[in-house]
Image (cartoon, rainbow over all chains, first blue to last red; front, side):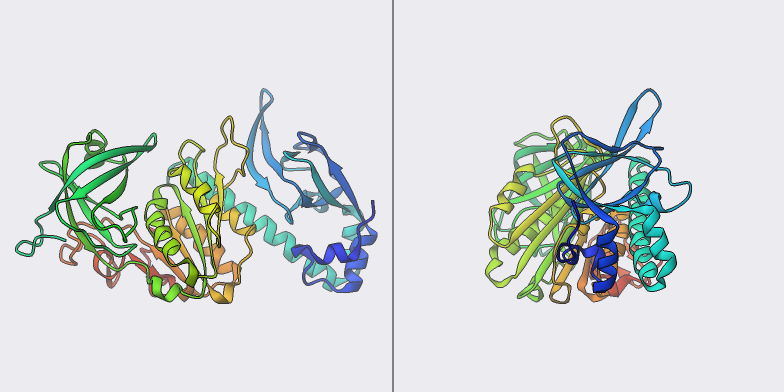
Length: 151
Length: 274
């Protein structure tokens, strides 16, 4: 299913994007749906898409030896995940699973990278948002680590 | 209030109930020997005869003056002994001390509250106050994180608050357990979910120092000014009178000048997050 520009405008991630830039996003995106407990991708999977959660809720975690999984956080509506799809080696750093029926925008990462190279304003806006996502994840992880260590 | 003749002499209070909030946290319901008046955010010194005293912010409503609730986390010698007490015991109360939340200045605004762990105790008192003045508020949003669902205190509070007009609550846990279907992650992550008019809002942060640090940074990142953020500081308050110096934080006695400060007042203090 194709993404409509009017729907993209409602997403906080795209709040500073121009109409033309939203058209670009729409042209390289599609809407995907997932069922409860469906794995979107596993840790260390090669990734082709960057996702933004539109509806539902997803669990993000890491895998440990002996098939053990640790649930690290919840992805909520409007949040971006699978950011590693645009950075070499394009391998996921975590697994993500739907915990409710979920709808996402899947943005073709290879095409997104090409647009970032082509239009520096588009590239700056996209990378600023991605940097903010990664910064929050890093900050949350430090916070979690300190909690676990009782510091 | 403390006996006028001796500022260190505690008021006697009968322990009438002990509520187990989580494996490490209990709420003590006390009936003081006379009316006890405090403002939300102020703290008391709670004592056990022959053992010692420790500072706590009451978790009950300041509008109730004949009963006091104090939530105590088991962390050391005095609190371990407090946790052994049963209804019928007599405890001591000194105070109230310090500066609480300037709730009058919250009128007409949205109040965002970020809490973690046992930090919900002072927040609970604040929530009672805000509930009482809800007609003068725009909105109250509580974001609260605990280590696990079992460690969450005042569980019934959340559903009660959600049923009140203008109140919204969000909960998360660091570690999930069987039966929990809510969000997992740190309390600060909840801030991504909420909708707030920052220019007409104040933020209150209360919890473990590490949560206060990360929480304050995230709230600043959201666009709040440093004078819109209220922090309830816990700094080993001892005398409660600004005399012993145990709680000194730079130029401030936390017991006398705080424990509630705006971030603007204390942001340059190197001891703020210690």
